[in-house]
Image (cartoon, rainbow, N blue to C red; front, side, top):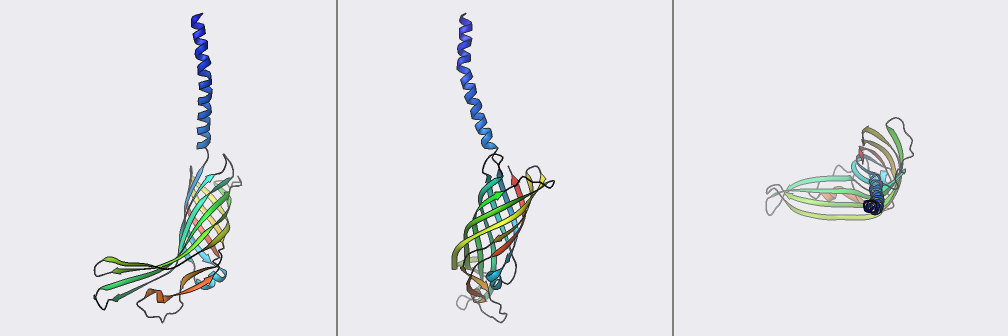
Length: 238
């Protein structure tokens, strides 16, 4: 009889512990089932409208996006991304009159964007291919700088920020996620990504300029910054 009471006491104490531990395991498993998406892309950026009239050709860039599933097994992901491309660059080389060092100077104009992303997967497949839709919004930075290097000494001798401006950008896009192996795949995407008015530096269309200062090959303009972004990259879901 004592053994029976002892057994019932043990069961009475262990059953609630077992139930609570199962709930903890289920919570952990539930948390782990929320998916992460990481993608890196190469981009072809096509400036349009007023931006396209100031920037005379397509540009190449890169981007990185990190998103997380909003709800378990849900169609919506959200997260952030960064992208950048070069608006133009120029290099000059000359000999300093005082030190007789050979100096190389470089000027660069860049666009850098930070975005909040929302992506929707409609749960519709073409074999290994799944389409998705995306919206985004965030600040867009235009940034230019010059750097100097002594070729004689082989060391950097200067760095200056020449121009900086920020505006708001927003966009919509459509893409295809093609599964290649397990959770890895190829990402292809087209985005229309307009931006509000900003000032930035672009290369002059003048082949007659002769100067030791690389900034003389640029001009400052202001306009909206509307672009199409064509992306091709690697995507992982885990």
